[in-house]
Amino acid sequence: MEDEAKSKKISRKKVAVLPWMRNPVDVSSFNKCPLNHLPFLHPRYRFLYTSAGKPSIELPSAMLLMRSYHLPVLVNGGTKLEAALCSSGIDSLFPVQVAVWQETIGPGSFERDICVNSPTGSGKTLAYALPIVQTLSTRTVKCIRALVVLPTRDLALQVRDVFATIAPAVGLSVGLAVGQSSIADEISMLIERPKLEAGICYDPDSESRSVELQSAVDILVATPGRLMDHINNTKGFTLEHLCYLVVDETDRLLRESYQSWLPTVLQCTSSTVDSLFASVSTSLSSGFGSLRTIRRVGVERGFKSKPYPRLVKMVLSATLTQDPSKLAQLDLHHPLFMTTGKIRYQLPEHLASFKLICEPKLKPLYLVALLQSLQGEKCIVFTSSVESTHRLCTLLKFFGDLGIKIKEYSGHQHQTLRSKTLRGFREGGIQVVVSSDAMTRGMDVEGVRNVINYDKPPYIKTYIHRAGRTARAGNYGRCFTLLHEDEAKQFKKLLKKADIDSCPTYTVSLDSVQSLRTTYDDALEKLKESVEIETFKKQKIGFKSSSKRKR
Ligand SMILES: Nc1ncnc2c1ncn2[C@@H]1O[C@H](COP(=O)(O)OP(=O)(O)OP(=O)(O)O)[C@@H](O)[C@H]1O
Image 1: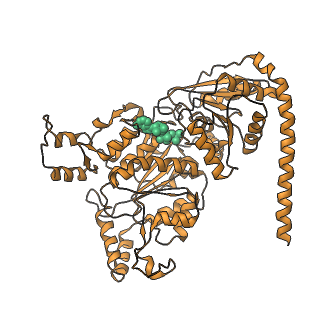
Image 2 (image 1 turned 90 degrees about the vertical axis):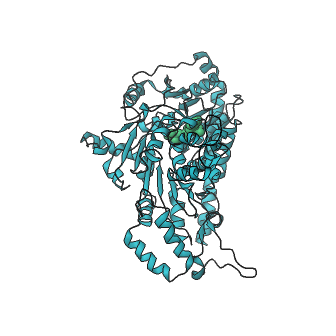
Image 3 (image 1 turned 45 degrees about the horizontal axis):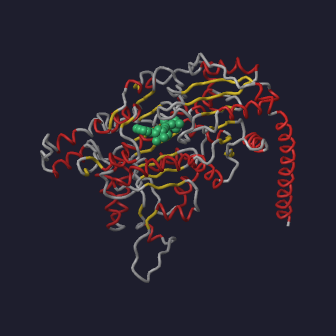
């Protein structure tokens, strides 16, 4: 939001778009592509099988050929990756995935850093996950080669799951650094302990042992805070072999410094010839293990005959920032901008936007009437803050049996509770989630048919991300915005920024609103009591902890 407020001020001064953003690759000019027609993947059938189904060339030479194209190993005439994708219900790639594929595995060959601005739900996660996994499938030594950074824990978990559906198929391990478990547990998942002879105890503080520690993962999905903890404190944790850095939800991640994670990562990964020579001279004295590391850098990280290539960066968002000072932080190399269509803010193709004009004092009643008219369809209700999320959710529960299960989701809740709610929502036990902006970005819950803006979104970016929780992956969805009469004009202006000229009015029956009035009065009374009890409890806890401190 701050980003948008600032960019508003700047836009009045008419900041020029960066030259490389002026002629983007238009993702909408690409079509969906069945997996077996994917360029560079398809020829394997021709190389390997004749029309009679007999192998046309020897398998080992075919394997070599595939390796040179970063193609994964064959299984029964298909690829392990293809099989993994198919078993998770993916039989073709979406346009953004095909476009990115062209620039990575295809002719583009990861030569440029890639910046993707593509609508919510268009499949950006797989767009970067698939080429990375395919390229790394030929690696022989395990170390962190790809790092994906996301702003929240739940988003990181979601992205880890996408990698986990394809990476193990080609023998790659995916790790998570988000602070979901204790730091010790996380370390044990990320770092492989040396295998010791019987009777010898491993001492994690021993300097002499640290050279033997190895990464247990090839791909790491992390949030900035926990990533910094590992960079600063975890023995054996290194990003020196990193080949791919993905900054997902880029504009959100660049908005805050998060302990300067980005400059730190860039510093950890800068592999100049100088530093390489420095490490050669130190490693020569430190034994065979490190010598292997030098060879790994020289051979595996090298492609296109460049022995020590730069780190490839991929940055993505549905509302990618165009602010030059923000983008400069990424230190992009010859960046390629890929965007969908000509409009900066695009909504999903099958999203229908509606407004619902309500009397200010009766807004909760309009919401209940709307929820009832949606008949239990999965729905996310967005409010403007964690406090109003809590209040609204509590109020809805006091409405009695609405026949729908409603839960709250906000940044103030404990992670375990949030995860439980998310699980229930995904599995269908919960039909309505009332959320603060914690669920606005990136969250992918299958079957969400409706999004309701209980509070008007302050910025178009907020509208794009909230609305984008529905109508994902080509599905249909609706976004309703509850407005007071005097907010309508402002809202119209806001939608104009995403080139939305028409936002029809949705109506709920006034009778159903009126019929809820008595229940509403009771619910309001109960809400008042509940707020008082909670305030009292909070004060009591505050008093206890402050008197403890005094003691
Ligand atoms: N090729 C595909 N075929 C079928 N479904 C797909 C494909 N690619 C992605 N999906 C599904 O589409 C949904 C949206 O994908 P994803 O979360 O990557 O979108 P996104 O563009 O990152 O959205 P956001 O901007 O909101 O983060 C997911 O449920 C994912 O499983």
